[in-house]
Image 1: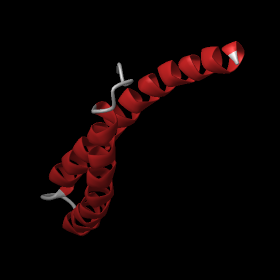
Image 2: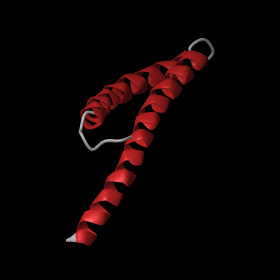
Image 3: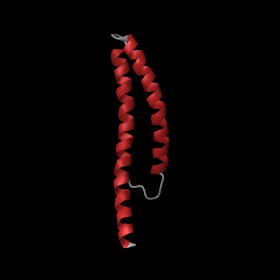
Image 4: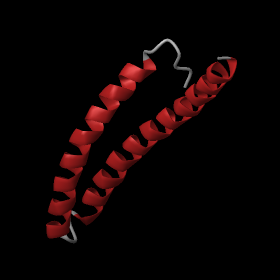
Length: 80
């Protein structure tokens, strides 16, 4: 039982790190898609429209991730 407890604690530490990495990835993806849209909006409007559409889809999914991440942040064992 002691080994299971030890490994569980180690896994929690790893997951705390992964959760922060996922948070960063979600933020970066939204920022990159938005920047790409702005970059191409005047020179390549068709591409910009596709990027904007992709941004809206990904942003919706990322908002779901953010809500779940926020729930995890509130857990008593989360140390981030």
